Length: 200
Image (cartoon, rainbow, N blue to C red):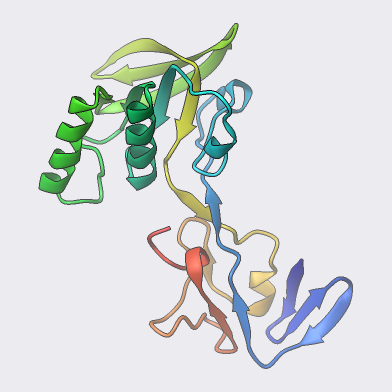
């Protein structure tokens, strides 16, 4: 693991290295949702879902961006009873409404339950079941499920790199800020991939 200790110095395995140019390519990770009880309940992400050895009979997907929608459709077609929870008023919120509606209609044909304008308030365990407590149109309800999949996006891996010491501007949500040539605020250092790309 490397750590920037200056604008042209990096420390790796206890050794200080000077560089003329460097690239930050540390990628991103699945974002953890700030939902009370989610850590204790346990959840899947697009990275951990492939470790499943059994198909969950019931699956709640939190978030209906590209990751959430892809996983929801996949599991529905494999035979899970899938419920998508979306805070906004349509799935695929960054996409054109007409395109979103095409996917919405396909999901309904596949048997996916779509809950729009729905906030996930809390999760809990009850025996082998997981309980997802949601609020929709001012009313609370509980959804029992076998697995929870979180698809609310990805967070850039900016922690522990010493970006401040190198003079690299970044944001915890957007990642390292770059120009059209992928150059950071330190002209010696570039960034590439999910660490700086807006569509993670």
